[in-house]
Image (cartoon, rainbow, N blue to C red; front, top):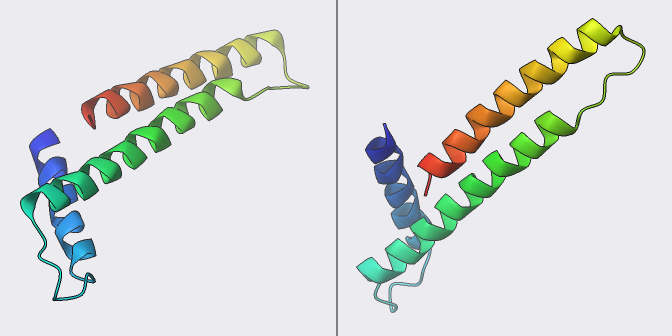
Length: 88
């Protein structure tokens, strides 16, 4: 799956660079730089989602419900962190 994501990001980078004027030669290094920037943006989005998931507060609910929601949020944050690490 990770290779598929990488190929998709490289293809997206190539497509983004098609808007560069024809007089500028698009090199593999340029594509790699754009793809790296896209991977960084994806990683940052997953990390931000993990922070949001763990920072939610649950007021006006029982302690048991609050603990259950907190455990669910931590599990979700763990999934987001894993995805962030895989997107490197």
